[in-house]
Every structure is written in C-alpha cells, then in structure tokens.
Length: 215
Image: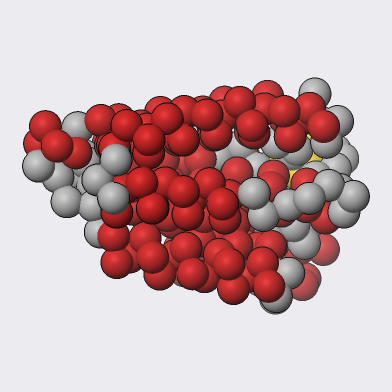
C-alpha cells in the first residue's frame, strides 16, 4: 500500500502544476515519467491521479497515459454563475440575519488584486479575486455553501489563468473594478447596488468568454 504522505505529495504537486497552468490542457502525462520526476514509485502517483480524475482535472486513457482536461467555456460560466449566486445571497440576507462581512479583509484582497495588476501577475490577481468572493460567501456562516464555492475556485483559477496566457490581445483584470465597486457599495451601505453589480457580472463574463472564442 502506498504511503499516504507520498500520495499527498504527488497529488499536491500535480494539482499545483495543473491549476497554475504549468501543465496545460491537452498535455499527456506518463505515470512512469511522473514517478521518476517525483522520485517515488508508480503506486502513489497512480493514487494521486485517481484523486485528480475524481475532481475532473485529468482523465486516464487506457494504454496512452493521463490527459490534462480542459475547463470548457460552458463549465467555467456555470461555476462562475454559481459563485455569483452565492455572493448575491450573502448580500441579500446581510441585514436580515445581521451578518457581518469582514470589510477589512475584503480591502486586503482588493489591494492585492490591484498590486498584482500593476505587476502583471495574473495568477496572484485571480487568486485574490476568488478570496474576495469567498469572504462574502463566508459571511453567511454556512459551511455547505462555502464548501460548494471551494469546489469551483481552483478550476476557475486554472481556466482564467490559461485564458490569460492564450489571449494576450484581450484586456484582462476586469474583476478589479467589479470587486472595488461591490466593496464601495457595501461600505456605503448600498446593498441594492452591490447586489446589482454581482448579478451583472455574469453577463459581462459571458461576453468575455465568447470574445475569447471558448464557445
């Protein structure tokens, strides 16, 4: 039986490479080569791949290897719409339940987004944009909803970062202005405007996905 620590090591390293765009969709991986590179036997590598396959990051092809899967434009939009629905709900019930949104933490993530844009560090930008959304959803204090969001975050990060690398002709970093507008509305106590901005974000995201040719 493979050591669980080795399985975790293989899983973490492969997942980071996939999400970070170092292993691009369409890449065919070899268990033997991965085992050699990670300096472990094939068994923990195979178990790690099984875990990644269950999450939808790869697919094992019989007698061919392991294929890194693409997140399609439709999948990306579906996940983003689900996240925005959670954000809208969090804003909707803020007053009703007297929930507290951590505005200070939102500001930290927002500042990091803008700093990342200045450094053209898209990976840091998208990570902090997702953390901004997660902070809003976390205010609901509903672990099932937060867990649902967490299921989508890495795939959206992966798809967004790869899209950034493949479409240099398109203007990126659009979530900076969106999140700043949501932050400003919440700070001013204008929940209706914050809700409207979150709802409108999906229409904008949909047009960008079409513009990038991913549909």
